[in-house]
Image 1: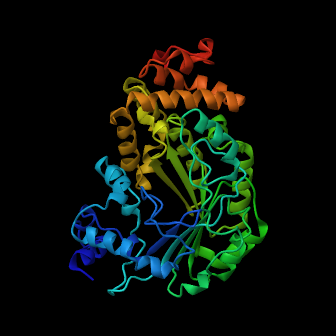
Image 2 (image 1 turned 30 degrees about the horizontal axis):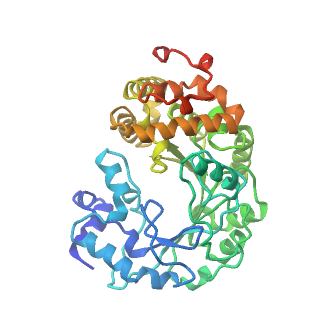
Image 3 (image 1 turned 120 degrees about the vertical axis):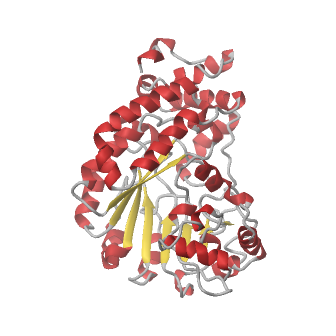
Length: 427
């Protein structure tokens, strides 16, 4: 193992600060990530899939493949692999990237990489068509995805290449003898038949993480979770509260999410609950409400965390499509709404990270006019496809923010109810 990698390990243990300033990440040495279509990638933040699949090679073979060897060689040369540009951009903006959150993973003291961490998206079956999702990750998106493709908003991920039928996986986790961490996602894992057998096959000292929209509960999986005790986590997707949640997590309702969350907390007192918040154009006003909602639980339950990150794809849903002056007003209001939570956030070590995110909101360079045009088309499609979202879209003044940055054509403006649009100086 190179001395540079050893420095990263020392930094994670608090012995020095130089490691995090490098480009090294433990993932290419210990981690395997598999998409719903069976294709491998470096991690969930990687900007491209590899050309290799789970059917073609087992996880250990993939980690030692030529593709992954090249990733490691690039990092050890002190350069960013092209697949890792998302982390590079986030860190340049002062945001805590996926790379900087991998301190829990240890690079093996060996020249032979070993699979100790697994990210397995085991199927597309899902009961939600979340506003920033696509057909690759949800069966609920198929009709809507076709409509968006027809509008020129390409979300047509390759779903015909799904490697296996759900429930007929080409390998079992018991083949990974050194596995210490298993992250399971979909689709919706509480609906997928593969989830329970996978969880049942994991040793009790393995860290197990399921990413769920929490729209439904699977009692068999939750009961199995009990044996993992402190090693178990649930990552719950929450991009807003109330109507903001309903817009982002269609057709799930916030009151159902809240009810299920409270039930899980009662059933699994030792399980870590992690809120996962993705910030985008659509929920640009939801950061403060989500933090306040989180605080209501965290002050009485220590086993809770919250994770924030800006949306990366699709480009037309990035908040950078909104007019800069509009974003500055949203940033100012967000800071004001969070003023009463600053001490709470500082105690959790989150205040600086959140301030960096807000700073990114008010300073990030605007996207190209073509992308802004796509954002407006999508917003109008969303209001038409899901009429109940119109009140939220109008009250959040999202069209104002887009129209300030882009002059729409007659086609793009069609369907906009200007009576709903408010003077954005009042925000």
